[in-house]
Image (cartoon, rainbow, N blue to C red; front, side, top):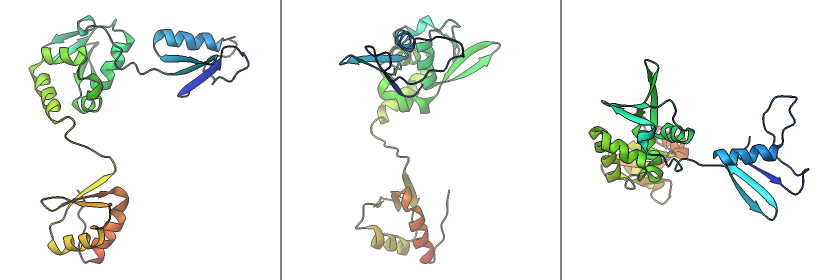
Length: 212
């Protein structure tokens, strides 16, 4: 199913995106969509007689206490086989899963936690993990200290310029643009799209490019 679908409940011929099902079934799509709303997979909004459906972000809608589906065992956490789907979905956003002797465990993934921290920092799940593990509590406290103070961008290039002459050449070419920023300790930050132009300028000036 695509990201969003709509159905006019007053008009059975109104457009609705197709669902995947086996041949030979007379499926009422509206009933299917409403059932998915009941299960929490979709949200529904009615406006001027039209029902609008959209995928539901259930990340923050796990209202169960972690004790109901997790148990702490030394330095890892065991998942109850009867764990509700929404709780499992929430765990998947911040943890890695491992199987040991036919039992399912989680290991917090702190790279994932950083990405979802603004949504999950006050949830019972993270608070419970902090309470059960000093190591996790320490790492989460470290995240709390730096959260919002460090900005990572997927479209930047960071380089260190050791040669004063080369730095002067780059300043001459980029000082009046917004495509490069000169930082302390001989570092520069530029847009990735400028990489080829920077390398050409460096090589043309008689220097070598070292990539790490």
